[in-house]
Length: 294
Image (tube, rainbow, N blue to C red; front, side):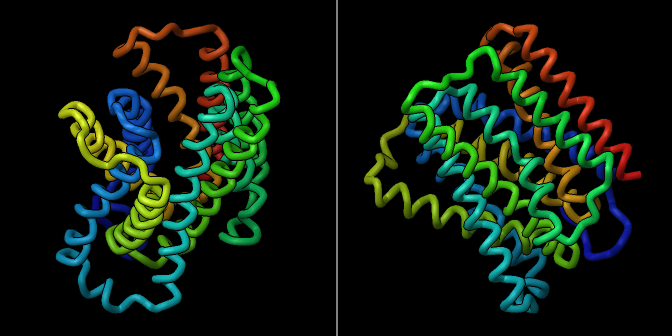
C-alpha cells in the first residue's frame, strides 16, 4: 500500500484502519498454528516482512531512501527498536502471567499514547480522545476480567505486559512524527528491518531453535509476515499520516475483538458475555475517537 508525501490520501483512511484491524487480528490465529517458541515466531514474522519490504522500498522509493536525513533514519530505527521491545516484552509476559492479564495490560496502549503525545508527537489531545481512551481501557479490562490472575509470579509478567504497551505507544508516536513527512515504504522498511535485527539477535542469544519446523509452522510464519505485519501493521502506519496517534491506538483495540471472533469461527472457542460487553465498549471508544477527528 503506497502513498506519497502529498496532503490528499489515495484511500479512505477509515477503510484502511479497518483493514488493519482485520490484518492484525489474524496474528493470534497464525501464532497458534505455528508450533514454535513465541519469540522465534515474532522474529520470523518481522524478518520475512523486512525481507520483502527492503528490496521493494529500494526499487519503488530508492530516491527518497537515499535523500533521508541521518536524523530521520535514526528515528525510524528507534521506532523499530521499540516495536521489537513491544513484541519481546509482551510475548515474554505470557510465560509468567495469565493470557487475560497480558491482554488487558498490553491493551492499555491508548492510555500511554495519551500520556506521551504532548512530549513526542505534539498532537492536541481532544476531550473526545480522553473519553475514548478511558472507555477503550475499560473495555479491554472487561474482556480479561473473568480470567484475571493476581498470583505472585504474575506480577513480573504483568510488568512485562505494561512494558509492551509503553513500547508500542512510543513506536506509534515515532511513526506519527515520521509519517508526516515520509512516505510509507521507506519508513516501514527501516522500522521493520531494525525490529527484525533486534528480535533475531535475542533469539540467537537465547539459543532458541530456528530450523526444523513443520510445513504448517513455516506457512504460519509467512502468513503472519504477509497478513498480520505487511497488511495489518502497515495499514496502521499508513494511517498515522492522516490521523492522530490516539485514534490509531484506539483502533488497535479492535484486535482482541477480531481475534476473539476469528477464534470462535476457526477454533470454536466460546464467546462469553464479558467478551461481548468489553467488545461493545471498545467499539464505542472507536466511534467516539473517530467522531472527534472530524
